Image (tube, rainbow, N blue to C red):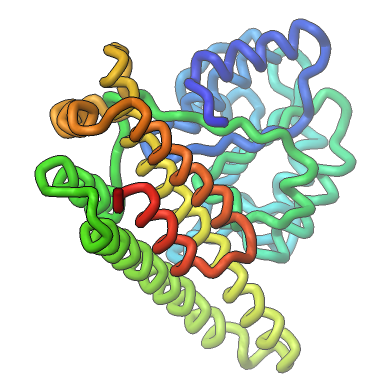
Amino acid sequence: MPFKADHALNLLTRAQQLGRLGHAYLITGPRGADLEGFASKALSLVSPARHAHLEDWAQEGAVILRPQSKSRRITIGDSGDEVGTIRYLERMIHRTTAPGGYKLGIIVDAERMNIQAQNAFLKTLEEPPDRTLLLLLTAHPGQLLTTILSRVIEIPLLPPAEARVFDSHEKKLLSVLQQLANRASGSISAALALKADFQAIIDKLYDEIKAEQEEEFEKEQDHYKQTTDGSWLKQREEEVTAQIEARYLQRRDALMDLLLAWMGDVARQQVGAQHLDLPQYREATSALSSRWTPEELTKRLRYLRQLDQHLHTNVNEGLALEVAFIQAFGR
């Protein structure tokens, strides 16, 4: 369950006070969650220094990696002298100490580590120096190896309601939901139309992710085909396929979270709650709260939550969406 930044920081503070602070955390969240700002505050738990920006922490001895070059990749590197690589982090994390005695390592956009870099980072993750704090920041944790995910503590963050930024697919979904508030509902055809709109959004999302990943792969082929054998190509093809699927599932889950947040606001409006996840859509969710009875809304939410659970299994995606949308919006 995602946390508000202040609550998440309080949990970390409590863990530090009890001597239970972990050595590696995965900070996740959508755009607007300010992962870097949260990381800066988290570093102050183990150091007397106070900085609002990660660049300032670099002056205190923190090792900060970001994607490099036009490819925006974090690579393993040829040696520990190559700044911005995993080899550089491995070398410097043993040599530098921040005020307070901790060794600090931060990887921004951690999903941009290529497979070789992720495998190399596992050594530091599994055998860190004493008094080390490693922070991995990413909006796409599904693109990290499961061996990394199993060795970090995830802290998912919510963006402040007023700072939330929506991408084009999320904006399209919100537009579709606004239309739901203004048009007749309760029929099978209306439910199927809504499902078709949602399907079109996620289909376009998948196509964009696939095109982006394949374009990067083509650039890698041009670079490596003269220096590697055919086994690299086959392995990399499999990795690209896995990355496409992982990123798609991550973004599809975000759209489902947005749909559930919308319906949650409808429920909040019915009971007069002041806080809304999507306050800028208050008028539309209020209209739906007046149209549906509390009992009807409870059923609709239950069907959508069941859909969210089913999408994390091997269920046929299209069929699961059709059944759930009919149940949630077709009556």
